[in-house]
Image (spheres, rainbow, N blue to C red):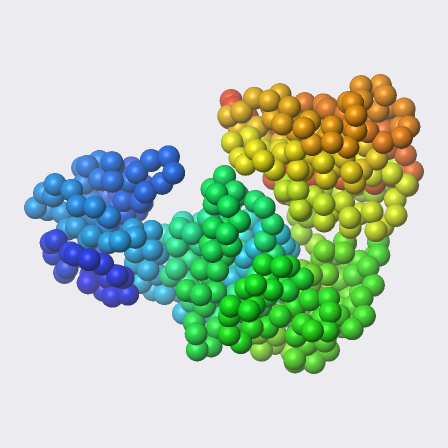
Length: 502
């Protein structure tokens, strides 16, 4: 494809060189660049792609997209742009044939619920014979083609290449999680969205976004810039205060909520250990919901999924069939079967609000006791650590603080930050022996996650509920020494097999 064609939808300031060059590939990693290919010099948090322009040229790059000019050699064409990431997204869409242009595309953004909604919509779209592909936190997939997901939303070049592959293999629709990082970095700017869904906004990623207002603006980008004004539709959860604000800022919004002032709301709602049953009013008619999903907050996820499906013009019957077929999400209130007479669930909750929502959902099931294992990741927002800890301590009979993904931080120091929240609820820390007595309410700190899981399993009594929070579907732990295999679900099964009853 010629450079002039690639630049068709890109905004650029200047081009120095040959617009008729034939481009054979595109990269943002200078180490991958070959002869006749394009290099995008992206500014990152840690490094600046402009520093790697010489190595990209040495590797054979014939075109460089950059935000500042450099001393150019004759064989290199330079495209000067204001925003290299946005240029990369738009150029990638053109280079890979605009694969989303003839697909039904739903983008989901918000702090919580994105992954669950993708699974719900995947089933609904399958029922509608729309052959859905999914890009999200757990994996990127279409049918039996499953790919690892290093990021919730991949870099624009990777995103377009993967969606092109899915499209070529038969995908007719796409459901994708649009993370705040990705929206801020314009990774989805080449996607043709039909529907944008907003779930909620709670404190998260503030190490990157600095404050909630910046975080909100990154989400707003999906609706203001990426949804087409003529036929795009926004689906907004107005149970959330930021959702109410967003709905007031946008035209032709489809609102979801518990009350009848929303466009999509439950006329009746029943939540139990068996799942969620509801009769939901929508502009397209009534949707009868029989979902195996657990927990009160999943009612909002179901409403958002219904809203997106209605926005796509699907019938209530198709929507209901899809929801009943959606059996659950890996690592989202995922049950681990056991012979202790207890309920054991693994969940991805790794923010204070997500953990609060999960614990409240579990309290509604009225267990004898709630035991919660949780940790906080290293190299991430430190301010959420005491918040998560306080939530765990207030909502659990026994809170067990442990290591999550410490990354480059000292796990002991992370747990010291966690203790600041725990002591707001309980005057002192229990010893493991005191916790094992099971009397009253309190907390214990066990740094080793495997040992913490074994400890909790050994404490279980009939009627208890054990929540292992933070890692969910992840099957690894990131330590200073590197990544190791670690799956909470596997560890629970091993502990159930190896441990003795208390």
